[in-house]
Amino acid sequence: MKKPKTLLRVSVIGTIVVALCCVTPILVILLGTLGFAALTGYLDYVLFPALTFFIGLTFYAL
Image (cartoon, rainbow, N blue to C red; front, side):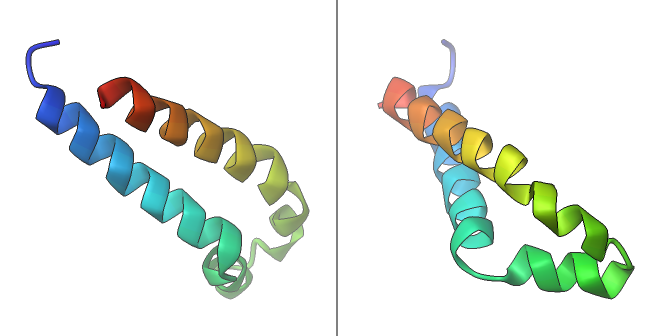
């Protein structure tokens, strides 16, 4: 790994963004505004694995 600080920075930012989308209704409001409200039922299938991935990447970078 040439730049471990960059990996840590990206993983922490990714974890924060995905956690915000999981906890707050930001993504639901955005999808409803754009007309993709039917996709909100599938957010759990995408957000929870993404959150797990970014948390694992953060631990790897540490």
